[in-house]
Length: 398
Ligand SMILES: C[S@@+](CC[C@H](N)C(=O)[O-])C[C@H]1O[C@@H](n2cnc3c(N)ncnc32)[C@H](O)[C@@H]1O
Image (cartoon, rainbow, N blue to C red):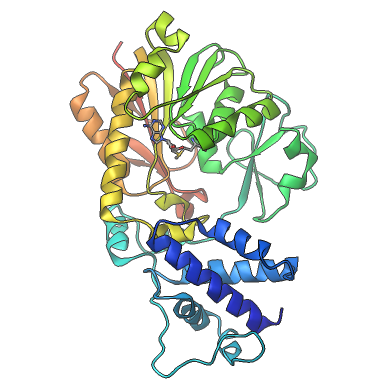
């Protein structure tokens, strides 16, 4: 593909991504994969270049752009090499029409930028939300150890006990160590979020919003495969991906339970451990959220949010905290996490939980990174080089 054709392909993809963002359609990654599946003539270099153009254009636009051309013209304001390619030659984009304008720049749609500002995310903190995330690995201590594991690329040792950092795009999925479950891809902040639960061998633990089990696997490793670990979620597709991952990682203690929304408590109470002991030692609540802390990986997510969606997240988050409080033993603990930097999804939820649960205590986390934010700790891409997280550790009265 000539450079102009790559720009035109990126414009077409941006049109599809913008439409999908408006109609809650497929995510950008899926649209890009489908686009190239139907265009086998595009080689790997073309695919990489088009993908890079698409994501750079998404990052360059704050509010949802009118269309793909406007988004690409916005990127051309930052990268002047793009503008001359709007010449209508070959398969390149048509020349710029009189009056045709570029999309607006910025961090996010205005209302969302304001919300972030109210949560003290502005300036460099806000800009870093749209940076490029590195590739972090967690060495799986059920099968290997960072001190002795040999990998095709060694990686930088991170503060997390088994964390390694590699350049984005390192083809880890092709490594034997990855296929054999010796390493898992996991953001450094996410590794600390799991550490915050301080899960120990022999304990009983629930990963309430386990999804495909990224954090469940880390908990099983922390528990040295001893104890009872229940992974629950309401999403069948996500939870079904946990079983093969757990087998690959050698995490034999994990049981999983698909929950019906609204029936979570009754269903979890049916788990024999709950029936026998009346509660568990610890619950991890990795609550569904707006994901403002993960825009480095999903920059188009900021075009999908609205006020009502945020309010729905806050309701579910409070509901899940309430539910968790009914699952732990006296003296048990909850770690509440969101990968959002908006206070209404972080400290706001914890404050309202604490206000209605006398006797509960919010403990200070012993982490080598992050900053205290009321009753929790905040990690940000700018300050900590991780995805953005709010993490709080809550202990029930004895
Ligand atoms: C942030 S994601 C979890 C990611 C996962 N822990 C990981 O590390 O990959 C939030 C999850 O909460 C789940 N969820 C939403 N409502 C739920 C509910 N009422 N009970 C349990 N899980 C729920 C979603 O299906 C989603 O998988």
